[in-house]
Length: 209
Image: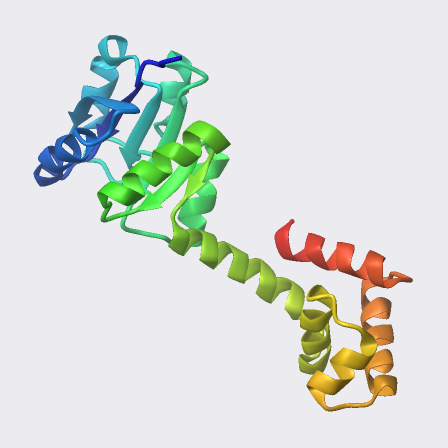
C-alpha cells in the first residue's frame, strides 16, 4: 500500500542553505519539502498552509530561539515532530532541547544521508540524535558510572560485560582467580548487590539511565 510522503518544513536563517535543502529533498520519495523559512515568524505564518509532519528548526534564529519556540508549534499540532539543527553540540543545549519537547537534535552541516537518517529515525523510532551527540552522551554516562570503581575494577567490569568467567578474567588481566574474586566482591559492595546478575543489571542502569 502506498503512503503519502511525510510533509517537512525547514527553518534555517542561512539563506545559502535553502537551495541545498530543496536539492536534498528532490532525491527523497518518502519525504516532501513544503517550505524553507529564514525566521520563526515566517514558518508560523505559513504553518496552516504547509501542515507539516516534521519540522527541522535551527536553534539560532534572528527572531526567536528555536528551542523556546517548540511550544508555539506544539500549540498548532501536539503531534508534530520537531528536530533541532545546530552547529553547537554542547550537552546543556541538547538537554534544553529535549526538556522543551524536541524529538531530535542534529548537528550541522547536514549531508543528504544525515538528513534522510534523521527523518527515518524520527518516523520509525520517534527520536533522532547525530552520531557525535549520541557518542558524547553515552561517554558521559559511562564516565559517571566508572568513577565509582578503581582502574582494576573497571577492567574486571569490562570482562564481566563480555561474559567472561573468573578464570578467563584472571588470564586476561594476568592475575590469580583469588584476586579477581577479591575485586568482584569489592564491586558487589559498592553496588550493594549479592550476585553477578544483580551487579550487571545495576551497572547497565548506571551507564544508560
